[in-house]
Length: 176
Image (tube, rainbow, N blue to C red; front, side, top):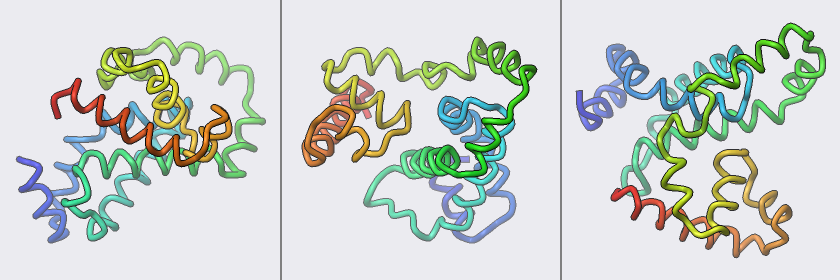
């Protein structure tokens, strides 16, 4: 099923579309979520929440503003960041037993937890050092643009402009 056909079915709220949507995008979205959350069970919960948000908010997707994959990737990233900032998540992390830490160490060596699982790390390495730094903070570490501005001691507008330019450079490398 093509993405265009899938979108038509999602707009119609056809139940078959949800299964296709999940099959097409769950692995890549989970990889991004798991890099941020670093807890498999929590990441699975966030993934489920992301798919519900996609389904419920499909009317807010605007094809002229960007690609569908970028839109759902932003939903996944933002939902992950919201989870990380939530009080309940922070409290649950404080109460982890030592058994969980052993599992986390074991999980950190699995391919699904590595940034390169979505295949973008090699392309990011080709960017200018400032771009690598900005993309790392914004996309892989979950910083907001304001937080990246403070971390790098750069004006917010400069971060936004550099981010846009760096993403365009990355698109050129990826031939998108």
